[in-house]
Image (cartoon, rainbow, N blue to C red; front, top):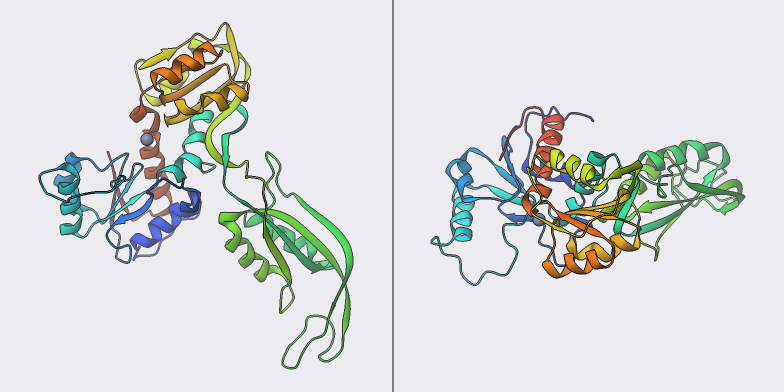
Length: 361
Ligand SMILES: [Zn+2]
């Protein structure tokens, strides 16, 4: 990953970097992610990363410029803001020290490369996919002179186009004839001003995650040789399978359920599970994971063939119904299951902003 050595890093640079990895456009409709308090157009020398903004963080809040949390500080509508209650104390501290507060809640749960991938990677799961796909897809169609098609396609793929499941560089090409008449004041790549041109072109089409639409079009503009680039970008009905809530995958070989649970406990640094519903009979192959309150996804996990689901928490009734339907559900604690967020964000920021002080709790 490229480091940003600029002396003056703004809070906006930090959140823009994180937004490229965990786009706020992926947030669930009910979520309250993003900037909640303060101003991002100011220098950023130090950042506090936490699962939540906690009262114990307030003693040193004046030492940082930006707070990045998983859970939003403001989630339900506030009726009052009083310094006697925790949220009032936190708002007063942030505002009086001019500290911005930014949440990456469901975008971190949903985005490819967020919490879901950390959890499945810790178990060595393969052929992983979201339990509930999220995110929109766009179809991009553009028309390129034959000789330039490879270069344009490379640029689109480098900007994030062309992923379908485990396949990358997916596109379709068909040859045809493009026609255009360059007007006064143009400097056409092919043909002459005032004369209709018939050019041998490739119709190149590929698929683009909606959150990367702008970046892919910028890459197209930069790589395409024409002065005016002809393209169509239109929304698709099918969801992206790259992003989504929860993940399911298969183990390289069947393992006893207890071993899988133990591996996840070690990864999360927890001694024991908080709740267990049902018993995975014998070795398991297909495992579902979902950090936080993932019990509500048990039906999707069962439908995906999972024999075991590891999550932060499930309600008693969710757990019982899942167990009686044949899916064992093991809860490891809401906080513990999402704690990898803190170290992950800290390491990403340290790598990309080497001059930034990153405090994590
Ligand atoms: Zn949570």
